[in-house]
Length: 82
Figure (cartoon, rainbow, N blue to C red):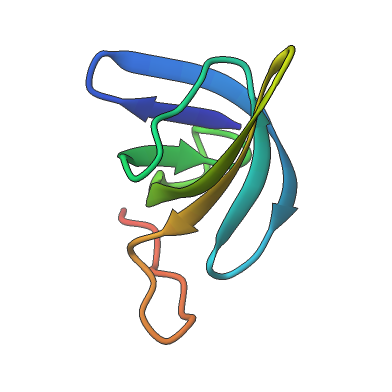
């Protein structure tokens, strides 16, 4: 899993994925309320999704975060461009 914003990029591990978001462990700390681009899976075959940090929990070796997709309406995942 990849999480990035302007001038920032970190890797993580998706713990749970749903239509509305993802719960993950990330290596570098994220900022609550900030929007990021999230790629769960192979970056070459999966389009990035916009998500905000809904909640976070600091741990000794990173953070556990709840990312809420901001590009979801009525639970429908948008199609990949191209």
